Image 1 (cartoon, rainbow, N blue to C red):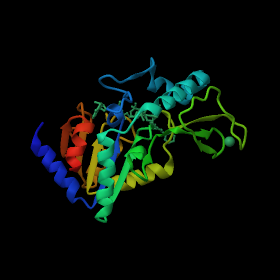
Image 2: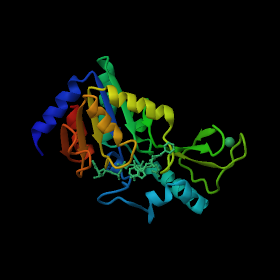
Image 3: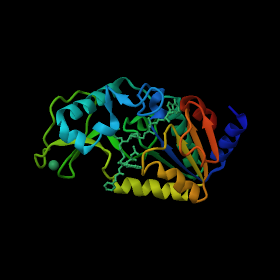
Length: 246
Ligand code: BV8
Ligand code: ZN
């Protein structure tokens, strides 16, 4: 791949006063977490995310959806951050060290950015490692042990559910606000490992570009955003992000 794209991106990231990053399932692929779409992705144990990661899918078969999420959460126990995650944790330290602003918004629900050392991660689509109540603000962190039965909320008795955003559900307001603000105000926007197909998250790329940020995309395949960004690098995040952060 063109080395000048890498040099250009590395310089942009090294000189930026404020950086916003959006990641998707592609950044966790090299850790062994299957992606949703594109090569090798798309199906989870025969379940299509768009059909089952919805309130309707849950209503159709609550226990099947519950078990699917519990299974995906338990699988995280063997999963480690990869050099792509670690490069973004290093980038946050560097930018913080020079008094700059760094925001990482992820569509992933695997907690790997936090495991790699990033802090204040904006989890646009929630987390597999948290449960929340259908009816009240109760939330709780859970580990990697399987939970066979759908638990009842200790506060109000309603069922608990995975604390993730399903299709047709709104993103957590304060999380979305923070991500949109960062994208709208950054000097450099980096999109890594996302097919840029799911909104409103994918809209952050356009928002950054419209507000004058220099935009970089790192993804294995072209995406609807590839024509929009200043630099589009076709590579594995785990290989190229460490080179961009240097
Ligand atoms: C909302 C959590 C309204 C659950 C997820 C028609 C047009 C446009 C939009 C819509 C539409 N119809 C409906 C919508 C809205 C819908 C949407 O965008 N649908 C899409 C499919 C068209 N959006 C919603 O429903 C959102 N909510 O709009 O609500 C509203 C507003 C207010 C109040 C009430 C309601 C909610 C969206 C969130 C859904 N939840 N996940 C779970 O995971 O189980 S989405 C799911 O897709 C994941 O979060 C995932 O992160 C996300 C995006 O996918 P990616 O992360 O990009 O992953 P993907 O596999 O697609 O791509 C990976 C890429 O990596 C690939 O390109 C691959 O080439 C690349 N890659 C692979 N390996 C590597 C790599 N790159 C680099 N290195 C590698 N090694
Ligand atoms: Zn409750």
